[in-house]
Image 1: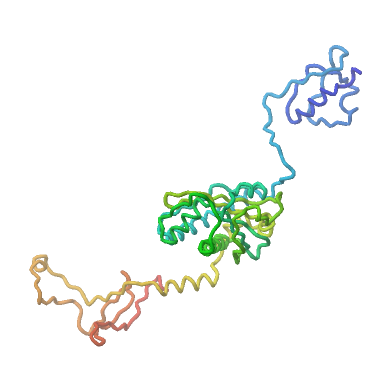
Image 2: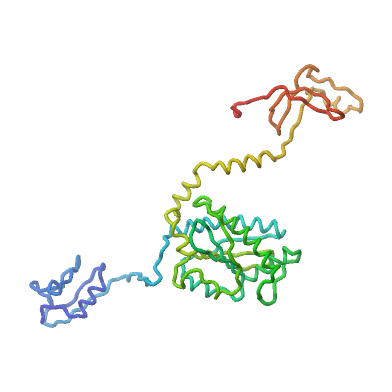
Length: 361
C-alpha cells in the first residue's frame, strides 16, 4: 500500500487548503496519488515518494494560522454592515431631536446618545429587560409588525418626577406604573415616536402609533424568540441620573425598506428636492418671524466739537429735503422708500417705492 497516503495525511492536506505545505514523507507514487481518492487538491504539490515503502506521511503546518470564526446557521445574519450603519445614523438623528425636546420639557440637561446597534435574536433582547420595566409596544405603518421601546426605571421615574415638578428623584425599588404615570409616559413616548417618524423621513414616511404600555417583559412577544432584530441601545442622562433605553426593530418590520437602507440611497434621498408640505411649513414660520423695521429721516455731518456741545433744543440740518423720500430698512438692508407722517398720535411712514437688488431678482 505504499502508493497511497494514509488517512491522517489526507486529513492534514484538507485542513491546510490554501496554505503551502511541505511534505516530508509519504507514499504516493507518480502513477497513483490523490486521483485514486477522487480528491481535487488544486495547487498543492504532489507529495514526493517516500524513501522507504512506509505508508505514513507527515505534513508541516503553515507558518501562520488562519483566523476562523464560528458561524451559527440558526442565527443567520439578515442585515449588511451598510444597513446597520444607516440605521445607526437614522437613530443618532432621533437621539438628538428627542434629547432637545426632553431638555425643554423637564428644564434639565438631557443627553441621549447611541451606544451600539446590534443584530441579535428577540430572545436575547427580551431576556435582558428588567421586570418590572417601562416597555412600549408600537407600530410604524406602512411597515408591518410591531417594535418595542424599553426605558429603564432608573431614568423613567426621575423623568416623570421632573414633569410633575419634583427634583427628579429615583424610586428605591422598581414597581409598576400608576394610572397617572401611565398617562405621563404615553405623552413622552408619543413625542419619541414622532421623532422616530422625523428621523426616518429620508427613507420612508411613517405613521407611528403607540399600541400598549407593559411592565412585564414576559408578556411582550411580538415575534418568535429566534427571530432576528436590530437592537439600538441608547445611553440617557437626565441631570445626574443615567440609564439605558433600547429600541428593538424586528426583521419582518424592516424587510420592506432594507433596499433603501444604504449610505448611498440615504444621502441621495436626503438631497432630493423638498416636498410642498415642507415648503408650506417653512413659509408659515417665516411669516411669524419678527424683523426690525427702521426709517432713516436723513443724515448730516458735524464736527466733534459741535457734537460734544449739543444741548436739548438744538436743531440739526439734515441733507434730506422735506419733499424727498426717506429710506426704510428691514434689518440692515434698504428695502423701501417712503414718506414720514402721523397716524392719530403715532409717528408713521408710508412706503412709496420697493427697492430691489440683484438678490431679489
